[in-house]
Length: 194
Picture 1 (cartoon, rainbow, N blue to C red):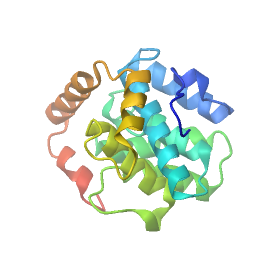
Picture 2: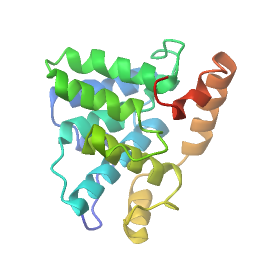
Picture 3: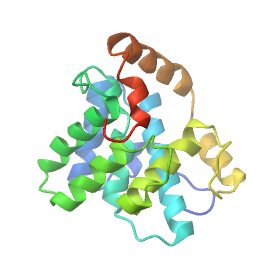
């Protein structure tokens, strides 16, 4: 993905039945096609993929894409089980990929990438996909202030190609809702063993 071409929508990158199912789950849960959340997931996937390519990591593309699409879905009422949203999202992903016959190893890798994407420390020991998702989300949420070595021009081109419109507004609304509904769980996203 080095260079300046980027897909405009998630429809351009989904290839497998599991990826299509993940994208359908995003659209059903959010009630939007190509909405702010979906575009966020696409950008996280593309950033993680670029970080992997520049690092020379041999990653599971399907795990990265499903993880990118689903990593924050636990913030939504339709996915939340009332607990810590990253854990709820990981369980949702486990159920989704389980319907597609993923091995326990790949399922755990995907669930760990979702559950640990806000960890404060590197997560390489849990798998490259886990740490790359964590880094990609931080690049995305920071608006490119954190780069992990990605050229700012590349990040800017990505943000220009895939609109970030309403991203912070929608995330703020979701986090605010989660704080009202389950105030003691949100701070626990940064604590292992939640």
